[in-house]
Every structure is written in structure tokens, then in C-alpha cells.
Image (cartoon, rainbow, N blue to C red; front, side, top):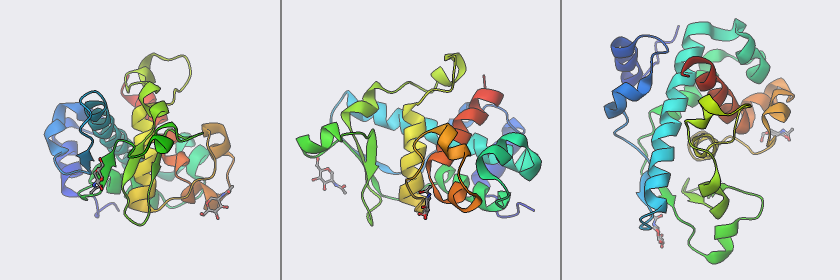
Length: 205
Ligand SMILES: *[C@@H]1O[C@H](CO)[C@@H](O)[C@H](O)[C@H]1NC(C)=O
Ligand SMILES: CC(=O)N[C@H]1CO[C@H](CO)[C@@H](O)[C@@H]1O
């Protein structure tokens, strides 16, 4: 059914077993958006968030492959959408091999990005990280926070959804994402960030 699963995920599944920690196979994350930020504090934070986002996407893809469309968390976020299609969007992030760039803001007006943590320029797919992004929680907070937190990794999944999958921006929150129509649930990128963070919290902590 999921014969289009890409090689790196098959390797991951073989090495770790379904839903095992993908962090132990970090060497599969070798192809990527390219860091274009010479700031020695912010550059490494962006790189870590990118690696963490690939973990989130991989875990989400494996979860869908394992549990499919009858799982209640899947239904909450993606309704009756074909799990192979949703999984394909996570696989595109997990297997990102583009040369699109991950950038520090280039102008001071962009650094504050009112209301935003980051943005993606189209059609380039280049992503820009705003001041607020650097205050978001680390991946580890998905296990320790009392409720599902916004994380740098989740924002990265959101932006990669724009850059790689051309998903839209509609519902900003996870609760609003769960309330979308069937079509909007598939279209709007926050659904993917929320689902992946919740899967990580449920299976990796
Ligand atoms: C890299 O960042 C610089 C600004 O620091 C910008 O001028 C340049 O266009 C960026 N390159 C790419 C490929 O995004
Ligand atoms: C609620 C909402 O605005 N949903 C949007 C999700 O994205 C699709 C595709 O871009 C839009 O058509 C919807 O309006």
C-alpha cells in the first residue's frame, strides 16, 4: 500500500522498527535545505530545528503507515483524506533534498515579522526566520510541557509545508486546525505541524 515509501524511511524502519526513535539514525538526514545564515548563534539553532523537523516528519509518516486512516488522532486532523496523500507530504519533508535556503532575516523590517515566527518566499521556497522564532521551545519540550507547545521544529515543519508541498496558511492553532473542513485540513500547513508534534509527544517521550 505504501510502496512509494522512500528508501531512507525503509532503512529507518529496518534499523529501528516502527515508531522507534529516529534520532538514532541521524545519518539519514544528509540532504537538506541549505543554511544561509552566518550568525554564529542563530545559524546552529536553525540547523537544529531543521534536523528536528525531519524527525517530526519521519515519525508522523511512520505513524500513518502503521495506523492508517482509522486512528483517532489522524481523523482529528485529516478527516477522511487519503492517508497515502498525507503521508506523502510528510515524506517530502523527511526526504527534502532541495537547495532552497534557510535564512536569517535580510532586512530589519523582516526580523520582527509582526505576527509571525517565520515566512517562506515563493516561488523560491526560501525560508526566513524572525526574532520570535528563536524564543520558541526546543523539541524536548514536546515531552515535558503540560500542553502541546509551539516549537522551533514545528514552525520548521509548517514552513517546509509551504516550501515543499505548497500548503496554505489558514488555521494558526491546533484546535482551529482540527475544526477545518476535509479539504482545508489537507490544504493548510498548520495541520501537519500540529499532528506531527502530537505524534512525537504520544510515541517518542
Ligand atoms: C543568502 O543570504 C544573503 C543575505 O545574507 C542574501 O543576499 C542571499 O540572496 C541569500 N542567498 C540565497 C541563495 O538565498
Ligand atoms: C479555513 C480556510 O481559510 N481554509 C483555507 C485552507 O486552504 C485552502 C487552500 O488554499 C483555502 O481555499 C481555504 O480557504
